Image (cartoon, rainbow, N blue to C red; front, side):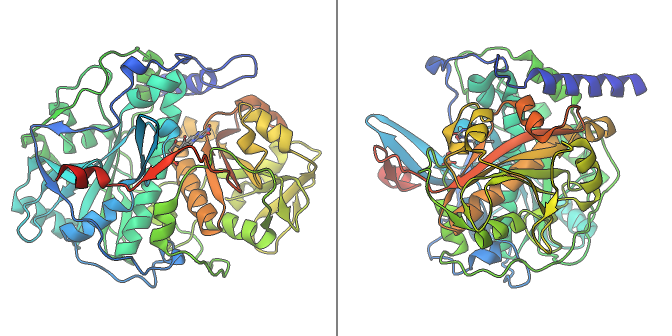
Amino acid sequence: MENHLEKNIEQTLAYHERTKHHYYRYAHAPGYMDWDTQPHPFRFYEGTSSTQLPFLKDKQPAKYIELYERSRNHINEFSLKHIGAFLELSMGLSAWKSISETKWALRINPSSGNLHPTEAHLILPDMNENAGGVFHYDPFHHALERRAELSKIVWTEMEGYYKTKGFFIALSSIYWREAWKYGERAFRYCHHDVGHALAALSFSANLRGWKVTYLNTLSDKELRTILGFNQVSWIEHEEEHPDLLCFVHSHKNSKIPLSFPSETLSYFSDIKFQGTPNQLSKDHLDWDTIGDVSQATLKSKTEAKTFEWDANPYFPQEFQFSAEQVIRQRRSAVAFDGKTTISKSQFLAMLDKTLPRQQSAPFDLGLFDISIHLLLFVHRVEGMEPGLYFLVRNPNEYNLLKEKSSSEFQWKKIHEYLPLYLLKTGDFRQIAASVSCGQEIAGDSSFSLGMIARFDKEIKKAPHNYRTLFWETGMIGQVLYLEAEAHDVRGTGIGCFFDDPVHEILGVNDNSYQSLYHFTIGGAVEDIRLMTHPPYHHLESTS
Ligand SMILES: Cc1cc2nc3c(=O)[nH]c(=O)nc-3n(C[C@H](O)[C@H](O)[C@H](O)COP(=O)(O)O)c2cc1C
């Protein structure tokens, strides 16, 4: 057992090391786009019955801040109407883009390379005339594909167990989708995307007055059974890997069990799942390193963990957009203008939103202790000297961070309550772009950042934490995407960066802290060659 754990730790750390981009070589990848094997952007379970979900008809009045705060939300019933709205504003389509003959869909949740490896599955009770069951969410049709039926008794048992009504949502990843383009580093990107999706779900649920709670005791093996993945005949390389299961409920204040009732679990192993996953690509490359790290980072059954955060109010701000507008208009900037300046108060408010709060989406879903900090390259923020700054998201780590990083840093606290420190003044535009694989978006923005994880300590505790760290970065990324829109600028996630050169900037020369994800925010330059089409116009033309 001990040896097994040691081996998994070693393999996880080795994967991380091997998939670093360096100035002198990128992580192993195909190096070109093989369009002949490009994965189909949508997963369907062929042979299942599909129920189209209703679309939101009216504009949603909720203000942007209501995405975060729970106190003002009105609780909606669990019905297909509201589950449709929940999915439409989290995992649905946001638009189509086209240029000459090429057309592609964008989604509410972002994804590296727009490849969307993350799938959502729901376990629903009977709702009015709609029978419950296990469903796959098909975002192309905004529909639920029924993969299994569930007996009423199961729901009665579950409601007794959780002592409240609700339903489940699970996420899974198709690694091949990202590996097709990014090769070995793809495992990292898939787990960023899980984090983005998780935050998107938490926000959207909050608009319904619901709360998403991560059931952190479950093992991946149990989740495979619950989702019936062990009954599916997967095409080699195209399997879905279970990521997590959440309970969605309206029990705002009380604690709910963070597990799945064991009698119900055995029921799931006996039910019959239907449907055949569609073929995504006609051929595949075998990235066995991804198979290895996936295996090494599997989650076993664990004790329930709960987390308590402060309940500090957010910085007071007035926003011109509603919550729905911000969610729908979220896009990645492909270029920045190199001149837009944001104000210091906007900058501080954006950072403030990345801090977890009690009774506030998305971080109260109970993922993890806070392990990610922000190394900030401030380029154009009015009232702030350009330079290198640090947001210590977990104050317990201030001393260690200080000890591990460059002794030249000032660590000058620049705000009374926000744990934000000036490390060093200077012009970091070139450096930020250079370490971001030479992408100008990191230097032409108002600010960019690296998400610095408490690293080897977490991996040594449990290799599965490798995934959770990426989920946390994705959640922060989702907050930043929305914050950028709310402040009338734009963001972009940056998965491509040179790992160790970032650590050199920080002055960290061991595995104690590692940069896992980058982000940039500023004034976007639109690509005017692209045409934009409504998200579900393709359904209108076929009906
Ligand atoms: C995890 C992650 C990594 C990304 N990395 C990069 C990157 O390195 N460079 C870039 O230009 N865009 C990057 N993006 C932006 C995606 O390409 C973008 O999200 C995708 O094309 C979908 O477009 P949308 O965000 O407008 O919906 C990244 C996005 C995510 C979520």
